Amino acid sequence: MTSSSTVDPVSVRLTSASWWFRSSDGRLTLWQLPNPALCVWLVTLVLGRFDLSAAHTTAVNGVRHGALLVWALDEVVRGASPFRRLLGAVVLAAQLASLVLG
Image 1 (tube, rainbow, N blue to C red):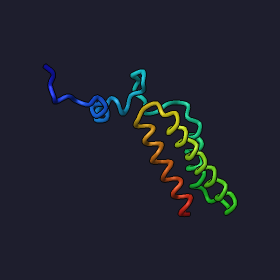
Image 2: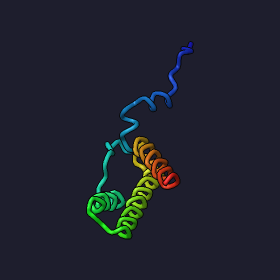
Image 3: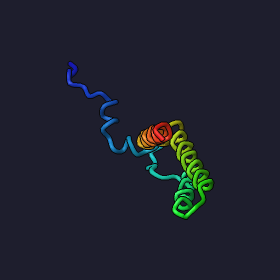
Image 4: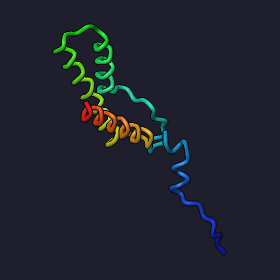
């Protein structure tokens, strides 16, 4: 006789912290080096703090948004864990919204 109260393996995985933060081979993957797009983004954040001309500010902002878009899209497509894919999707949506809304 089988029990009628079976647990759906998908729902167990979705609530498991291990599933959200580990790659398919079991490694904890929150940050991976090197991450060129994030490095470019961080450099442009620092550059944006300086008193730049309007043209330079526009260029730095464009590179900053572009680098974050590249990183987010890369995480959505190739993220090592579900958390990173979700984070990439959230950042991608926020960047696209900020570009559209100005």
